Length: 421
Ligand SMILES: C[S@@+](CC[C@H](N)C(=O)[O-])C[C@H]1O[C@@H](n2cnc3c(N)ncnc32)[C@H](O)[C@@H]1O
Image (cartoon, rainbow, N blue to C red; front, side, top):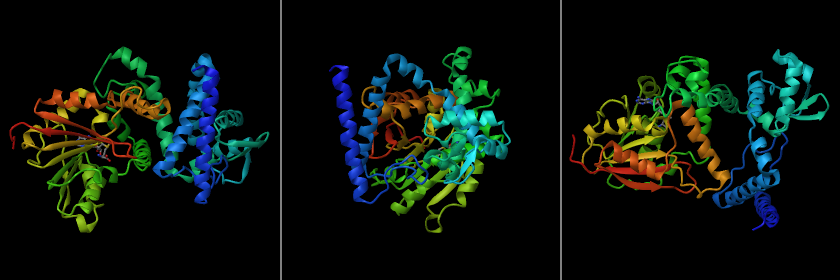
């Protein structure tokens, strides 16, 4: 198909799908998307309607690429300056005035203690991405996005984490690759060069309470985004025949709390580092506290809970290179009895060509973040199978389930060796 007809086809796809989306929003009296303050922060749509939103976005992404052409694609995608602008806006709290009010550049400079010309240039650059408005020359007002930063404190923390931790780490990841080619070590990354440290990322960040809180808050925001709810896992797995589950690196135990509430016969053990375990113990509702118990355990040492039916790991392996993941899996072996299941709840990257570029981009970005911070990765189905096989040939890979609407897949293997316990 020639580009000319593809352009028109994409324009029609956008038109048809936005019309269906608008009809749905009107039918439930939902406000229409807007770039003004007060607009819905995100469209929370049922799955059958999300399809219209995603189809329009896919088409708009391709249409933009066609209209830009090859040189435009290369030049316009390199938007590193947006991150500098966001860092400045967030760090100097340039968003800190009420929606509906206006500020001059001089007033914003005054309230933030930064140079007026600097403020003007940062805000005018951000404006090109619909962050802030300038209703009259020299006068700043909020857009929907700039006002959201002040309304959602976790969003400000997320911007801080991206601009202060991830962005510098990304910018030094090529240097890290030259210095330590193909390294699987968590302290030989772009993060290490950018932040001039020999410590692994989590350790370096946790040494500074402000950065640790910022990172934790950013993770909380992400964990609460649609598609991350533990219910996708708990409600889409067949729990018959399961009486004991160990959640390894289970943090404060939100998944096990949901599971224990749903299946009253299941006993859960949540393992994590000492500080997290102490916090987690205080957060379990009384009704299930006898079935959700906490235990300090380092997953790089042999698993102490022997003979459980399921060993569960959510969002653990993507923080580690293959070498360390294999170590984590081998440390389970001394506890496993024949038929024990290892269930991983993480991203599973589909093979190339399955997702549209718009859908695939966040997964690819996550994969690079894992490289930049940990020398780790996001894995596809074949990589998950290979990982289990490399750890021990008695792990038999059972496959991957993609619960509808969930961002995380359910990846399962079974121990077919003799009872180790
Ligand atoms: C990305 S979080 C995932 C938490 C939880 N599974 C979830 O999905 O919400 C990684 C967790 O692993 C824990 N962790 C890190 N290193 C560990 C280790 N060596 N042994 C046990 N837990 C560890 C962290 O404290 C953190 O709670």
